[in-house]
Amino acid sequence: MSETTTDFALPPLMERVSFLTHRLNALMARACNPYFQVWNVDLVMSRMMVVMLESGPLPAGEIVRIMALPQSTISHQIKRLEALGYVERGQGKRDSRVRIVSLTEEGRAVALESNKLSEQVANVLMDSIGEQDIETVRLALKRADTALRDFKPACD
Image: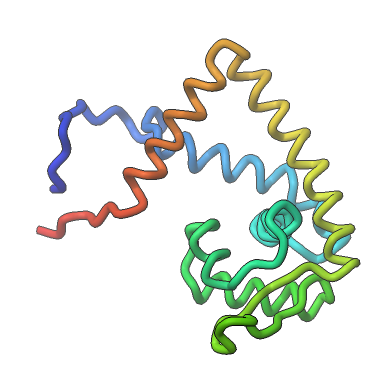
């Protein structure tokens, strides 16, 4: 077991924060993926495109960091988006080994539509959590993100 600063009694799986966050993501995918089918993308690819919409062209490694997914998964998704004509890859200006990913005009249009759906999902979440609690939840999730970023489970 990994050392923690606080020992909590482990609730049943369906009451664990880790499972509840899994369910939220699964429910978002179930609701959103049919909407994305018209563009042949899924929730992960749409999120990647919205990140580029907000941030501009990004090195592939930065997309890996932001999405917190394996490099191989992100590479596969970038290749799919490129084949669909939604992104293009180019060389970095300072380092030609760095691959920069940017939205095409068609990709920008899909990202804008994806962001509209993201706003709807965010509104459902915010309404269900409540105005008084939303910032507390957001900060708690950011702390959890930071804690899990470097977490390595202990193997017995």
